[in-house]
Length: 105
Image (cartoon, rainbow, N blue to C red; front, side, top):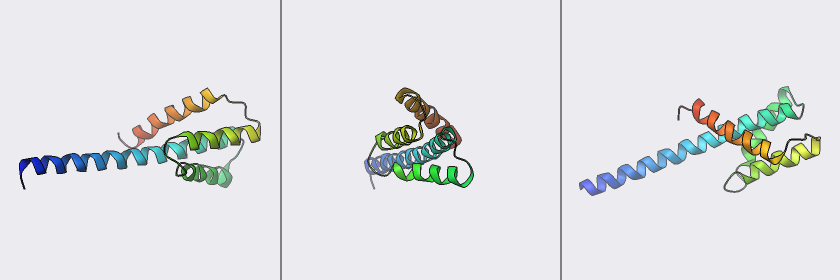
């Protein structure tokens, strides 16, 4: 194998690792977001755990964060939680940073 092939393989491995790490960070963020949202809606115990798990699944509907945001927005509206879109998006960003820290990124 030439040095060019080795280098190409190295870049491919790095890309796969970064994508896997980002996927894990997003899943962790979504769980943390689900826990926060559950608390804001007055859920606790098994209900809160189930809601957090549902939040992780919600992110698999489409690429990006909009599916997760829409779920939180709709659930907050249904429960009468008065947080603005800005508060939700800011919390999502904060929790993404937290998830990356928790995963050592």
